[in-house]
Length: 276
Image 1 (spheres, rainbow, N blue to C red):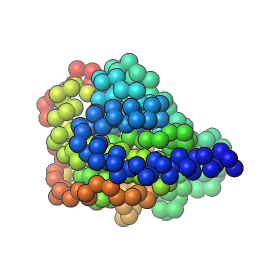
Image 2 (cartoon, helix red, strand yellow):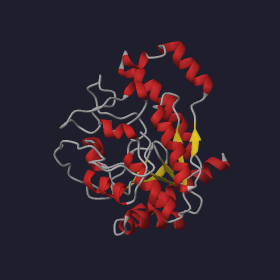
Image 3 (cartoon, one colour):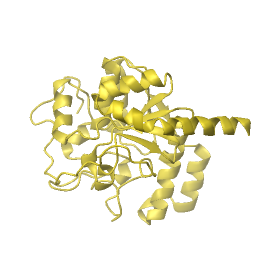
């Protein structure tokens, strides 16, 4: 009980100072914001990477600036081989270790016994159950003892994400959530990747813009929403539960730009360490 009370008091203190923190971070560049938070919360700041384009940008910033931030990823057991290959190449490029969290074996076995190996196609409820076991539960373990969670979310990715803020309080995980690239455009991100020769997933060159588990991801057509390739058989908002929780508004909400045709990331450019 005493431990629970101490944790509750700590969370209340974090939430109370969010507005002041948001004002400070809003004046900083992404890497400067990450640096400030890592100074304010030593050894309590983590970055979750799915190895997507945005996340590779943030990984580059953390590594190049030698920021004391733990980087982790979630291996659901259903990832593309290209994603796992990128994980190895990223660790080698930046000489850093990315901690991998896996779903609990017993939970996966129970899930498959209940809905089948590909039962997530049959209903939204089944798909959300799969995401919970393979993503949400491992994420909670990764965030359990931390104070700040850094993500690669951008407002342009979807209307749901467009309503988010650079600094939020994530109610589901009881943690400060920082989205340093929230107001970056797709073009800004691609330019940064090219300029810094950042390794990326070759599936992006095949119009897989948002990449998750292999059975739940397809390439998109020009003009489609960037997340249209995720759970394409569903009509609901394209979220797995990691970023769909309640949050408290602190920054001015950003307007969503009209969806544009997505050009290939390469445009005739191939990074030196790209593996096709």
